Image 1 (cartoon, helix red, strand yellow):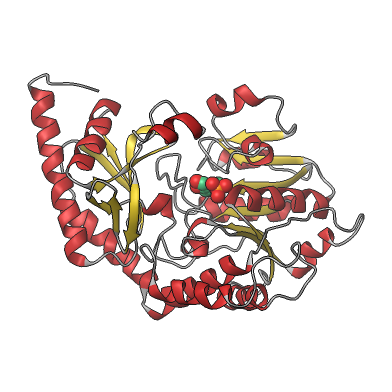
Image 2 (spheres, helix red, strand yellow; image 1 turned 180 degrees about the vertical axis):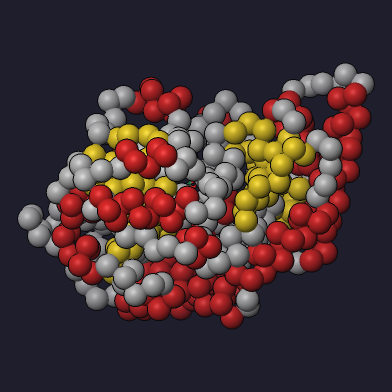
Length: 402
Ligand code: PLP
């Protein structure tokens, strides 16, 4: 591995993938040793248009000639922010018409949680087991995995975790709660969907309790599940929507979106109680505007459903116990973690980049760019199937290395 990477970059585990990137183009990552990988995880659901989409690059180049950062968020009128906010409002339900830009997903959730507390005047929050909402203190406080929370206690008080998808548990939500926060599909939880109707029940319970419903669409948003936003599958509208990842087309950007009435509570008592220096960076905003336009112009939201169909048709194997998720946000559940690890390793050797999900060692993420060409998708699915055969044979002969 690159000696300066080893020496000077902080690691997030003892086993980083350590792939050295030369460049990235469309659905491919090109490494410094010349290998060309099919990117089947899109930088964890970021590169929905593939890498370096020409429309995104053009927008970025134009903005570079105008201005970079000029002022903290919220003070100046910057056309890239105004244009993007209007564009988002035009594709969202009318109650989601006020956009607060951030730099990242976790920062969007931090803003949403603070907004819910400020608007309702309440302090408690409901979150769900196996959720992932980010790694800053507030987001971690509503992330439903003790192993990630315990080293960082004390976290926010007043968070109640309920089992995801459990109808009866929703009765715990009462008028002491500021909000409930949930992902439409628990991505890091292993691409878990709740039973049909559960989100409607959650919506109804929040409304009855006067608690805001915060939907974290940081991973599911911008077409990945076959709808522009995954709440559209559920027939509900959240009070606060959080966005990031694919939003910026490869540039860092996030947002929390609410009604003007709810959002107004951040303006005063005291003013400037929630500010950010770089939120809504103009270069990220123009990249996001171009990304949204491309998603619409190239029919990529619908294409996510085509990707799902293709994967479900072609990826069948006795080692796969379940193929979960929606659109191009799928999880292949394998019989055990040893097999899952071997499949990821062997696919990498065969130049298909797959990845794990944070909370589930048996679930392998399948999240290619939405515009992955048909032959590249088919190549990758063929390689994965061949690898599953090889891993099964190795397992049968006891050749285990995981
Ligand atoms: N929420 C969800 C559902 C996510 O999947 C992630 C990141 O994986 C986050 C929040 C945190 O986003 P970020 O890494 O941009 O802070």
